[in-house]
Image 1 (cartoon, rainbow, N blue to C red):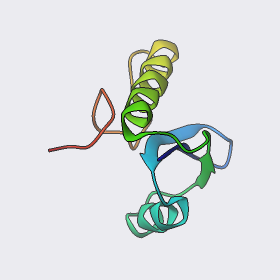
Image 2 (cartoon, helix red, strand yellow):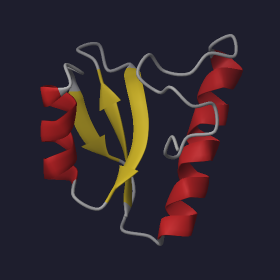
Image 3 (cartoon, rainbow, N blue to C red):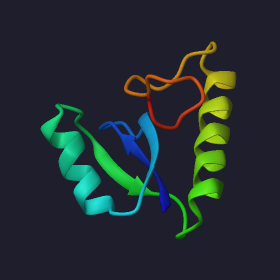
Length: 82
């Protein structure tokens, strides 16, 4: 797994996530109408560490953005909706 961000034209993050295939994930975002450039931010890591990385990135983002997630992140803690 690798941590990544999806960023808009100005370089602002619109999504934080983890994936084991960045190319496939970029295509999925594009198909879902989420525009931007996918930037891989970490080296490969375990699934558990990837989940904690995502949670930390979202928490850090909320601290500096009035408690709000990036536009396309829907869950407060990151991870997958069940």
